Amino acid sequence: MSGAAGPDLAEVPEERRFLSTEEAAALERELLEDYRFGRQQLVEMCGHASAVAVTKVFPLSALSRKQRTVLVVCGPEQNGAVGLVCARHLRVFEYEPTIFYPTRSLDPLHRDLTTQCEKIDIPFLSFLPTEVQLINDAYGLVVDAVLGPGVEPCEVGVPCTRALATLKLLSIPLVSLDIPSGWDAETGGDTEDGLRPDVLVSLAAPKRCAGRFSGRHHFVAGRFVPDDVRRKFALRLPGYTGTDCVAAL
Image (cartoon, rainbow, N blue to C red; front, side):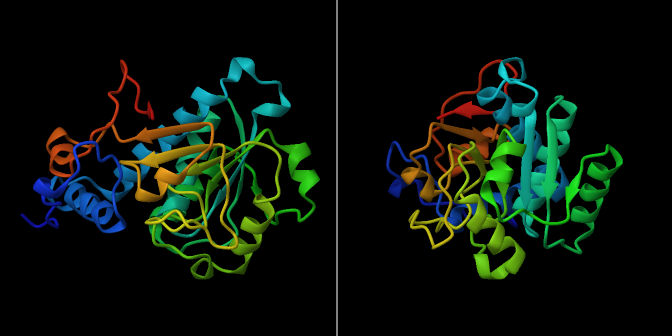
C-alpha cells in the first residue's frame, strides 16, 4: 500500500474525533494514492460541501438582498482552491459571491478554477478596502479560505496577511474553511492574525485545533471519505442525514 500508515488503533481514545496535521496529511495521501481520488476531485467535493454548509446556516429564503452578498477571500494554497469552488457553487445556489484573491497561484488547478468563476461573472476585487465599515456595509458574510493546515501567514504574501488583519475587525459573520486562518492546526493557538469565525467547516475530518473552536456552528464535510478509511483513522463522527454532504458537530 503506497499511502502512509494510519494511527495505531490500540492507542486511539474511544471518542477521538480530531486529526493531527500528520494524520490529516496521511489520510489525504490515502485518498489520492490508494483510492485514486484526483486532487481536483477532492477540491471540488470540499468546495461544494463548504457552500452547502453556508446554505445551512444562512438559508437564502431568510436573507435580504444585501445579506446574500458573500465575500470569499482566497489564498494561493489548496484552501484557496476550495474557496474558489465554494464561490462558484454559491453562485449556482443564487447567492451573490465576490472573490478577493490577491496572491494568485500559478498552479493549473487554481487557474482553471479562477477561469470557471470568471466565466460565470463572479466579480474579483482588485483590492480589499482597509476601511472595515465599507466591507460590513457591502457584504452579508465572509468566507475565509486564506490559510490551510500547515500554511503560515508569512508564506502567502503581504496582501493576504493584510487581508487577515482586516477580516479580524469585521462585524459580519465569518465562515472559515478547514481551520481558521492564522491558527496552529495542532494546538489551536492563534498567531497575531488568527481569526475568530462564527462557522467552521472541517474538510474530510476535524483537525485538532477544532477542539478549541467556540463559534456557533461546526460542520464536517467528509461524506466522501470511505468507511474503511474512517475506521483506519478512528474517525467517530456524527452520521450524515439523507443526501447531505455535511454533518453538524
